[in-house]
Length: 259
Image (tube, rainbow, N blue to C red; front, side):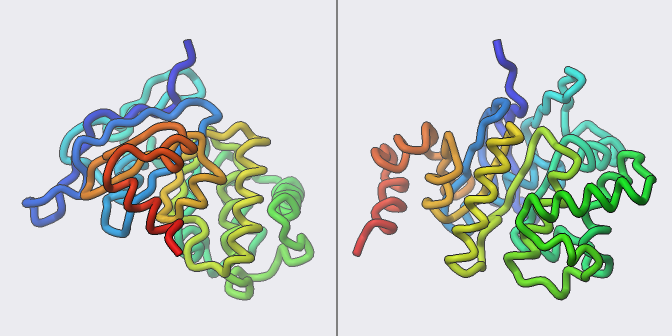
């Protein structure tokens, strides 16, 4: 029996004021090689749930269990800060909505990619530079720009660089928070094609937060719909989007297809 890479059980998180919940009773599983989308309107709790899963926010209740490469079942919120950061540098990736938040803007493109390898102990300059150039090519960036600053890149190029930075260490799990938000439509389409290709080739497990149902349809095997902090519907993506059962999901889908 295949074990899930990620198991989230009865997760709750209150707003800082302590009166209302940002996430309420969220339960989900993610299996090896599976892509799951979390969709919903702004304020539905999608990004808060993702950050709780990543260990960046401590939930009020519930647990997040990650099945590590060595077979250990790790309670994410019982890890020390050092252990969590090591996990982030090795077996996990986190692609931010705004690429500048996921990059070091004061160092070169190549250094951004190589830094994660250095976190795994690689110190050979030639190997670091070669890996960085290779990954720039993989994400369709000109490797001749390896010494350029991310500040000189367009928004779409920065997002590609952030993806390269995350994937260079060949993580098992990638968390993405609105990875195409704010980009031009043509740039979004190319980036989505790239993400789909890399996820499939690397057999990655991925959780993708998005408000765009088209992104979910293109990338995700399963889709979870959130409203007011709760997961109100989940299932195979085509089923959820083509035959929604919950009234809120029906409203979301109809708002996209309406003329």
